[in-house]
Image (cartoon, rainbow, N blue to C red; front, top):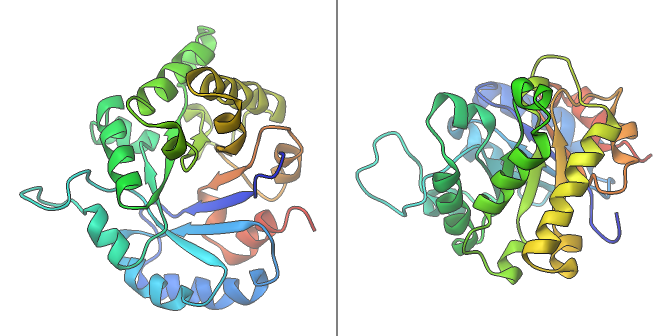
Length: 252
């Protein structure tokens, strides 16, 4: 993993209201204060402010699950990067497969959002991954490399280093099926090679690449033993403080 600091990000999706968020943090924060991994929680928009107040002075960072690329305007129902920075958020998830599948997110809007996040000093966690059909057709690598290349369009090398990629095979999200550690390493290693090809080895070695898709305490050690896997984007297992702590403390 070279000198890359492991990153564990909890994507709560449409779960945990304000009270549940505060209860989670009351239990979780004391457990993780000695950990050396970087930890991010990404609650729903309505819980971000309460979480931000609770996270002041702790080693846990705050992320949002989505944002618009414009700073303000007539975009009903959207949230801007300025609003996220004000909270303050450190990270923002961009291009999650559920956003692509249900809310018409495209490679172009993902690229717009990445550029906007970087401009406003929000670190993007950019999600890529294939469907079961694409895996069965044997086009996983080609498809995911295409997503990576389109995500990075027009982004300079120094900015690219700040991006976190998350490889999430769509067929493994919330299904209980996990890509084997070797399968995950194959795709994540290919992503790193692609970044090296688009920029150079220095940029590729700086970018952190996470695995996501039914990550749980039982499989985190095996995933983290792979050379190019720098952490995890965790869904369901991040909703309970005990299971997310077990994932974050994988190296103890």
